[in-house]
Length: 361
Ligand code: F6P
Image (cartoon, rainbow, N blue to C red):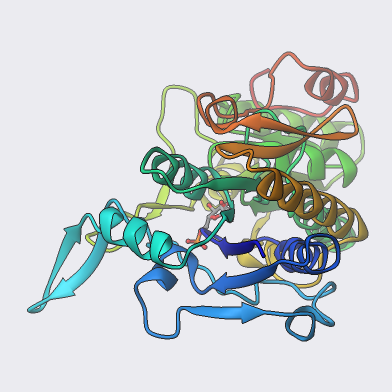
């Protein structure tokens, strides 16, 4: 009987439970195998009660649930694990121990569901002989070789609804409403939601912006009789010649956290365009809650493809969506180049054609 392990790592994304459910159900139904869940990413391999059996009962009713029943960890990199010793944070490489623990569990395959950080760890663990299969998740949609990651569609819908809601209050008060969205170094959420939600200005990391261009757009709308404007700004957007803005700098425990560009844009518009402006930071609302039907469908297909790869012993691969089909690619292909918005692609061209300012005109 084959024995499979599954873990979820990095920031959560709606649809993780759909992957877990598909893996467990197909492993039991088709392969008569058994599945163990690993709690909190790779941490579960070294924590007490970190491994537990996943049977049909464990995955019942989880399809519509956000988050992950396995738990996740942002700081669980076994190659550079941060732990407190004697009041001090120290960095340890426990990858050897984790690889030994994985081998001791006699797993035929380990399915790793994660974003680029977690999948990089998976790739390094595979170099240590761990039989891994990757599944791409992230609301940021920034993983190469797959057209889309699950979680993105849910985030996009939350962001679009926020833009719809901001429209009515913007119009009533003749204000500029700025919505800061997640996405890290990729502008997919802001671009797609901005287009779906009728934003007047969309600022993304791939196209550095000139704050005066935003004011010009706001003024042009006022001149044509529309006294409100909606700005969708990606947290990773930066002014031309400037740097990305961080809410929290890196410290011994965590990496730097993006945040603040929305406030900067809102203040600039208020000061230079002479209109009232308000900021909304949508934050983790984009990651929480029930996945959309699309994300459940994609995550379920990814889970199915992952357990098939695992059962066939095809390791070091990641499942992906290409031309509507589920395929598999090497982890190298997925990770060597990050996916970004193409500034010359059709979506940006269409946005410009619609009269949306990308902040660079
Ligand atoms: O990668 C997903 C993401 O939500 C990014 O869009 C965002 O910058 C980051 O994670 C936030 O991470 P945390 O949950 O650590 O605040």
